[in-house]
Length: 305
Image (cartoon, helix red, strand yellow):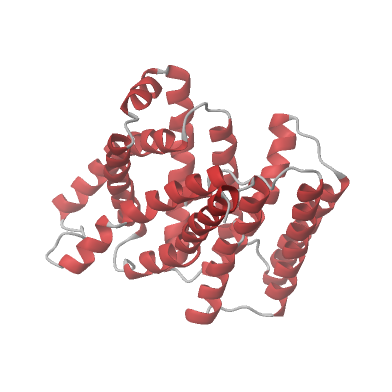
């Protein structure tokens, strides 16, 4: 086996590991923490992700880059904005997983790549090909189908897609390495998380670290389940064509959809099937267009989920 083939094979394994985490392991992890309020899960996730990220910064000797980023006013300001966006995304995702809305989370992350295209046009002056316009219109029709049939728009899916798309837009313009940026975002959120957790311990509402060692271990592991897929995704991106990464990214929301319907019995009727079919067709058109033109589906740091 040649070096390129071996490199690609390793890259695929890294990508599959990352998307397995996001599609199956992460939602299952949060399901096991369902006894804890979503805001407490979020706060612990931030704190332990910061600890894990700092460990990785030390292991990969990126301390100088971290300090330079913190001392850069513009980059720090933009990362503060992206930190706020990803915190909102995480909170909605945690609440949705533990409230029986895994199908909507999968819908949100299926919509996300197409919403990235729209933001690229609006804010980065990118130009759309006719096939990409058709894909966006089809995806919009899928969302509208759900809204008309249910009498309300799928707000969970839209909130996840929008918060993550705007997060990706901000991170796109920040010249910082993925691990360093993730670490700074986590550190910016950590003081608020620690204050909130301090309040929960003071008023007796804290769920974690009350004597259940198994549950406490699951809480601490939120740092790993948050940061590890990011590292694996970055390793895959270094070894694979970007178009391959773009195609593999759909494994994660597919896993969430299967988990919601097959394991947790969330409703999925013919209206959902029609809406998802429109979005899947849109993604197929968009991906085929990207492959033909030698570009890739826009997949900004999916690892932040």
